[in-house]
Image (cartoon, rainbow, N blue to C red; front, side):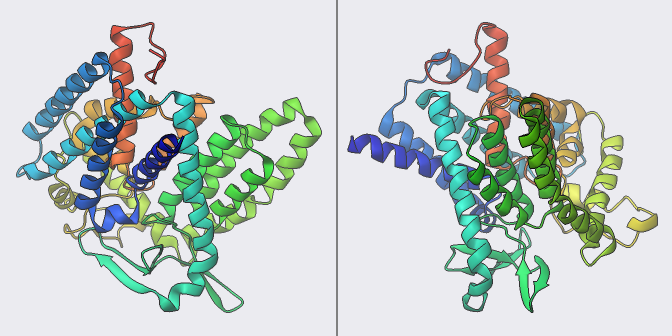
Length: 419
């Protein structure tokens, strides 16, 4: 019994660690060390518990990695020179690690077992975010400033437990500064993805209790994120429309209650374009417009995975109108829109295939498939997330499923004892 409890705890730690691999502060401050630690911990669990890994899964993994290498080679061959090969090596390592994580998950758990661990992991993220929202304003005087020059991250931290970016001020309340809640992640826009994912699972997968759902909604509100509010309203509205069909009065009452969130969304949206925070919206619009031009010029094979070269390339495009006041100095990295960045760096065919595999992921059940797909794509359209370990795991899981499904059409799931 104790062994099972220990195994459950160790697996739960892996799940939380894996989630943090999708934008956690730890992976921003110490990217290479944290990524190596995630891989080492996964391998340690494989050695400790020796799950029965099916040959078909290993074969699929090998073929997919070879295909990813081929894609990267084609991209490198036709990319804008010069390209730093270490960038390609890093992304290949992310695919290798993410594939190993997928194999461990699929070989160790039934889907119900994984879903329980994943749900608990998202709950841990939510609980921490609630405490961060309540305590961090009080702990700021006792916090220290940390930064990472490569990523440009700078923020306060209290004992490396709570974090707050220095530029995430939201508004003043009774003379007190209220900051946007980012939890364990480098940006509130990242935290909102996991909270909305939790909300989706609560509403459509496990049918969580009303109070639990309300706590998730409250936590989402503390991010003060336009994207968070927009995704939350979409997820809730679809659910409530279904509820109205089943229980008319209960559905209408719930819809009226949800409508109370709309003023928060509209106020936040208005500030993005007219208030103090309008630069945030313009940067995202700038990224979108600029990368549409990159995709147009490098449609087939992309501009290359070297983010430094990609940053320099972007300086060649001069925008006009309301976006002309923004500039990109060529020394910056990344993009706020990782979906468009993927299409710009590896091209429409390779990038499109990776995105299809991403939406075919095996970790969240395809209930309300269209809604889930829209949410997953919006989530990576507002933050530089798509090539982080957590999200590459989603891509790899889709690749594994598509490959195995093509060979064995009768397969409906990759989870333990299910194929």
